[in-house]
Image (cartoon, rainbow, N blue to C red; front, side, top):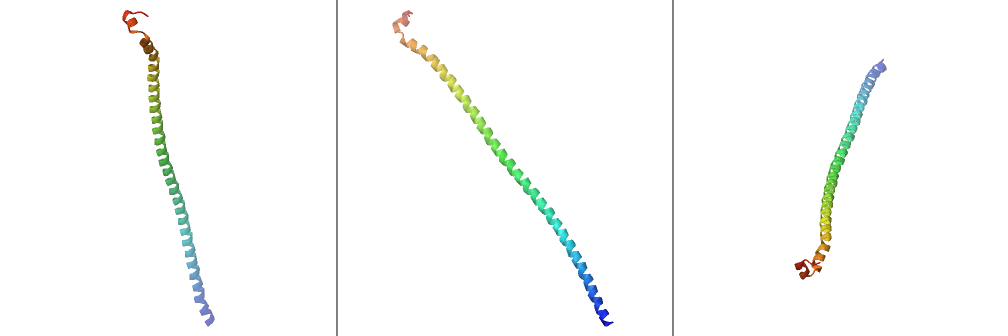
Length: 112
């Protein structure tokens, strides 16, 4: 029966090893779950950062477009003002030429 006594500590050791294995498997499962959660959180944060970057880029581009639109409006107004004054000057030119074609004597005596 000495052999039976030697088997008892082996059985006890196997039991301890199985408990240790179960504990390690539980810890492994826990750490894998945590890793999965952290990966999802990291992905979420990366998406939020990408959105913020796009929003900032969009804001900058929108401001640039608004400035260009404002500049174009201003330039168009200046062009219209110049065209109006240019048209007015051109329409007044024939009258000025007619007045200069008259001789000073005719203007003096009102003859045409």
